[in-house]
Image (cartoon, rainbow, N blue to C red; front, side, top):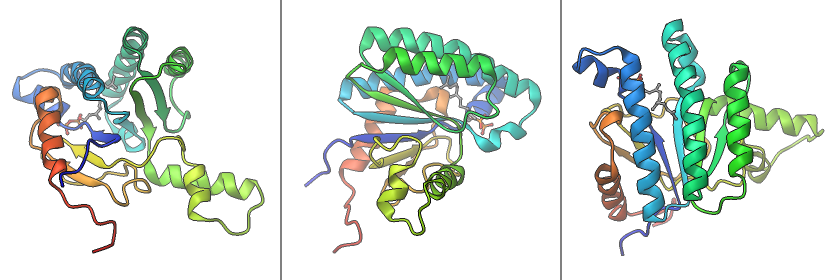
Length: 228
Ligand code: FPP
């Protein structure tokens, strides 16, 4: 029997820089085109009836990029958070953010808070933006929260309950674009039983058809969860 539609899809959006380079454009033009692909993908996921979509927008390691690229990305994020909030209200999707607030600029933090508060009661697709996100840092955050409660030993459920967004179920499917085949500190805890789909398509070229391809492949995978 084919797998049913995943409840949660997580995407490592990779290849913006290479997309721009192929066109002799600055890297930021690639990120701008990437933001358009984000919009298309949210719409496609919503149409399909996916419940959760996690998008890796900025990793804790991305701070090592040149300062002008970081500034450009933060600026783009601020602007697109406004647009996404408006779209979320029009189309009933909810925005969540996973990651550490420090050292995100105050302007971005304000937009995040506004986006999360404004869309909190929407009942359609939940879009979880992984922003200044690192999976090892997330696990550490959970362990420290439990230590602060005075716990001597912790259970698997304790850790799961103290991740950044404990109400979001583990992703059944993780997609990475641009031909790279690694997890890069993304959802290490939640990916324990996820299926992986890698595509050479660069993120700015990702669209509804590519998402459908990933889902078709997923539908035919056998998931055993350690059983037979
Ligand atoms: C990877 O491409 C992409 C990023 C580091 C940032 C992701 C950002 C976006 C998709 C645009 C904005 C997103 C939102 C949510 C507004 P890369 O720069 O690593 O590409 P490369 O590996 O080809 O250099």
